Length: 81
Image 1: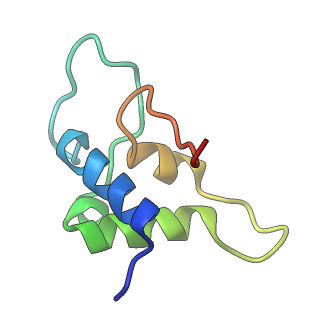
Image 2 (image 1 turned 90 degrees about the vertical axis):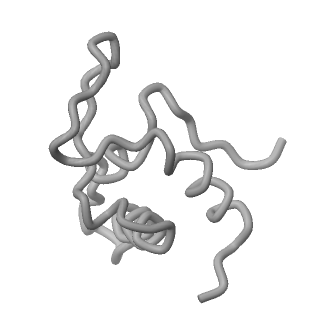
Image 3 (image 1 turned 60 degrees about the horizontal axis):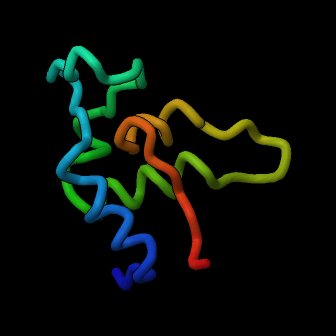
């Protein structure tokens, strides 16, 4: 599977700091949804979960909690300047 470079870099930058179900967060970390173990099992799984959380037909609600669970606390998604 060929992955766009921006998405691959995003996944690589987030993968070391993801919280997986069953692991406790640092006491000072803001409250955030916990990532499902299957969503963070590999870089491909992270990218699949990212796309699944933000994609879908018009009018269908997005899974913003799932997207937030893939991010480190206080992280932002930004495009190129």
